[in-house]
Amino acid sequence: MSKRKILLVEDEEHKINDLSRRISASTLSNAELTVAKSVRDAIRDVMQFKYDIVILDMALPTFTKEKKSGETGGLAQASGGIEVIRMMQKIKQAASIIIVTQYPDIFISGQLIKLKKIKDTLRQRYEVDVAGVVLYSYESQEWMSSFDNLLEKSQ
Image (cartoon, rainbow, N blue to C red; front, side, top):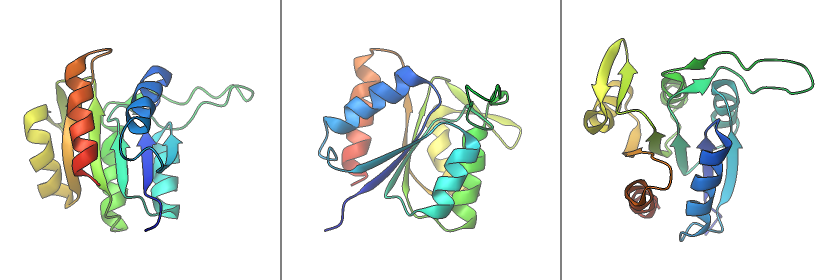
C-alpha cells in the first residue's frame, strides 16, 4: 500500500505544531505531511498532488509571507478555506476534508453558518467529502479527541 498523503492548510505556527503532533501520534504517523500556509499555496498543492486527507483552516491569508521580500501575506480571508474547497471541487480532488477552526460560525456564500451545519452545507454546495469539523481551542482535550477520531475515520 502506498504512503498516505496529508495536506495541512494552516497559517498559525502553534496550530501547525499541535496538529502535526496529533498526526504523528496517530496511526497516520508515517503519512507524508505537506504544510500550506495560505490560500495560494494550498490551491497550488491540490492542483499538483493528490491527497488522501486535507486538514483545512478556514481563515487564511491570500499568500504566504516572505520575510526577506517584505510581503505582508495579505489580510486573512475569513473564508479563505472555501477557495481551497472550490478548487478541490473544480479539479475533482477526492480527499477527505477535516476542517479545524477557532470560530463557532463560518461565512459561506455570504451566510453565517453554525459549525454543526458546516459539514452538510459544504457537502451539498461543493460536493466534497467533509469528514467533520473541529472547534480548535488551545490545550483543550475536546478538540484533540474530536480531531483524533476524525483522523481515524478518514483513513
